[in-house]
Amino acid sequence: MVMSIKVAVASGDGKYINQHFGMASQFLIFKLNSDGSHKFLELRENKPACSVEGHSDLSMENSVKLISDCQVVLASQIGPGAIDILLENGIEPYIAPTFIEDALKELAAMKKK
Image: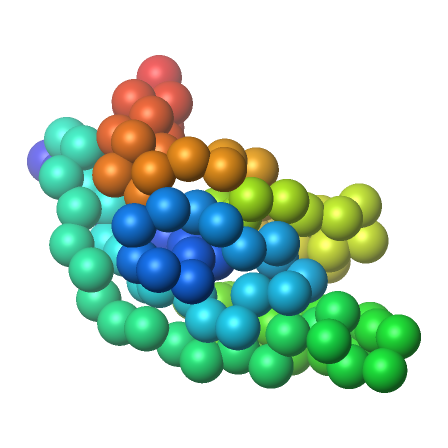
């Protein structure tokens, strides 16, 4: 049986994971299957937490809410505060400043174990 998870990717160009979680203006949502295949589902616009004056936990919470149906988030960088909030909401944070394709393949391989 093929299991699948939803993955949120912080990317500005749709090819490379190039956005910091707290500054991501959008998340690309993928369905990742245990066999390594994946499908792009949608693009979600985000109000970046770290672009607000200073930055507040509330805006970070909003970013987390936006991807709350995902089990994993991939970003080029994720701060310790954001990691805590993600984990509290059952979302595994991964720092992977690489091509989306490569990161999804790697993630599928890790999830198989």
